[in-house]
Length: 210
Image: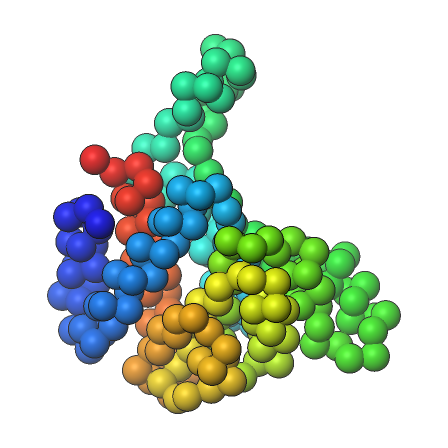
């Protein structure tokens, strides 16, 4: 792991010392996410309400430049040529927000008697062994996220969950659970933003930093 990555995590702890207990977990997750991307896999991300917005936020930080330049590979650059618009493209870290597909979500919600299988359906369609599913749930007990995690495990994906302080159904299903040390929803969400910013920034540094 690069020294710059460790500095990013230490910076989070300096700003939020109450998260010091998460340092080892964060470093392990960063290492796993970076390894996943190096092997050519992708993230699937899901959550409800504010956590659905957080899922979209994560995708925005991963699919284009967050803080570091992301030049195209020489092979891709050669294939695309030297037109001016190509210079505005950046290497992406593939990520899909499962909550963003309105037509599919509403079709599942309309057609199925059990309305909480919409994320599970997408994991079934998108998920491949080697991918990682990120479930963001302040309670850790969102049935839609739980079912998505169950499908992910069946398909050989690993599961990372961001939850609140309490033990939960997701924590029992996940390979890694990062628990915000709060029980009030909005306070958990405030910490989740800091955590996934740190994860995205660190992974970007691992992939594109010096």
